[in-house]
Amino acid sequence: MAKTILDEVYRELKKMGLTPSERVFCMEWLGRSECYMRTLRFEQLPPSIATIAICASKLQHYGERMVQTEQYKAAGRRFLHLSEQCHAEINRDAEATWLEAV
Image (cartoon, rainbow, N blue to C red; front, side, top):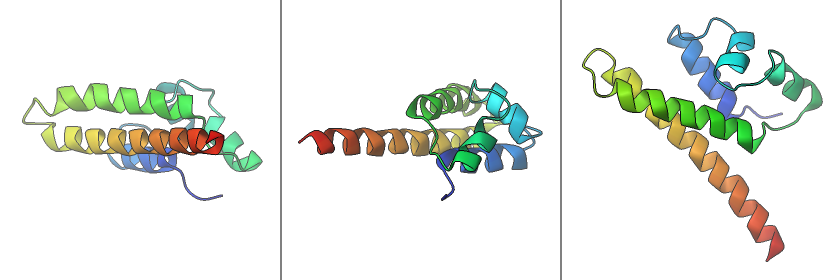
């Protein structure tokens, strides 16, 4: 299965030292069980839109606060960019859903 936006977010947060493991990322950033990402890979499933939305919201929340500081401005911009990518994924999925009905 192709890499997902959540894979990208996880890699970036890990690189920034903000999550120590995929297990912690699943619980703290996605609000899911510790094996959520592993299960998706095993079952070859895409992440749920609800999960992407949770991640997007959290990234946006922290990103907006971080860009207001000098110390974390660059990291905040990266958070906001990742949030936008999550929102774009949500929009693509929604559009595909309503286009099927047309």
